[in-house]
Every structure is written in structure tokens, then in C-alpha cells.
Image (cartoon, rainbow, N blue to C red; front, top):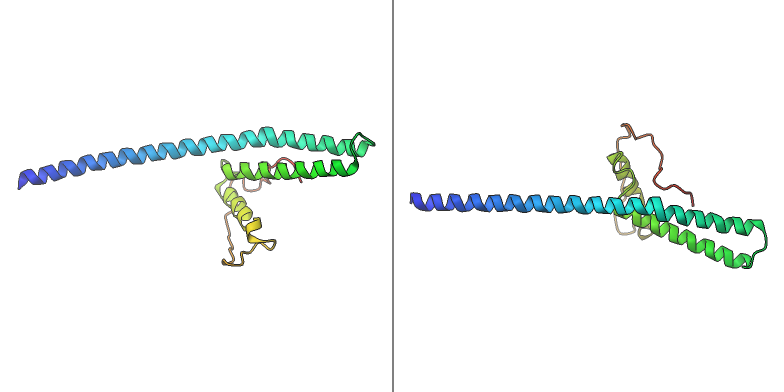
Length: 156
């Protein structure tokens, strides 16, 4: 009987060690994926979004400076396309890694919840027709709480 108990104890001990190693591997993988998403989001914000903004401003300047080889309607269509492209990139970078995450968790949560509430899936009013209304009150104290949104560098 003692031998069976010792055998079960050894089996449980090995199983627990294996389970802990799997948990550590999953945690490492999740941290690696989160870091990779954050770097991708930052490269979009620091590269593509700024280049898109600059090119959009260039087109606006061409439109204001006078006649060009393209018509004003064509320039307006290009500007609209660039605005759509810019918003898509901004949404992608925010989904990969919410702004403020490294600075303030309450600000990151507030930003994410606001984007979710006012997403097109919830309509213009910000309320889902099928779901309950969501109200949140997050703390605003902390070193970065008074900061305004700086991760989106350019107004629409």
C-alpha cells in the first residue's frame, strides 16, 4: 500500500512540474506576442501614419496652390482615400497595441472602451441595439493621467 501511495505521489509531482513548465511556456509566448504587437503598432504610428499624413498635406497644398494636372474632384477623391487609409492604419495600430498602455492602464482602458463603444458596430449613438448600455468610471490620478491623446499625432 505504501508503494502505491509513493508511486501516486511521484506521478502527481511529475505532472505538476510538467504543468508548471507548460504555464511558463504559455506566459513567455504571450509576452513575446504582446511585445511583437506593440512594436508593430509603434512602427505603424511612427512610420506609415506620419508618411500618410505628410502626403495628405502635400495633396492639400497642391489643391490650394492653384491649377495642377489633376482636377479638384480627383484631388478630393485622393484626399478622401488617404483619410480612409489613415484611419485604417490608426485602427490597426490601436488594435495591435492600445495607446497609453505603457503610460497608464486606466487611460489605455478608457481609450479602448471608448473605441469599442463608439465603433460602427454600435451605431452612431454609441449604444448597441442588442446589448446593455456601458458606463465606466476609471481613476484619473497618476503621473500620466492628465495627458491628452498623443499617440495619434494628426487630426482628421
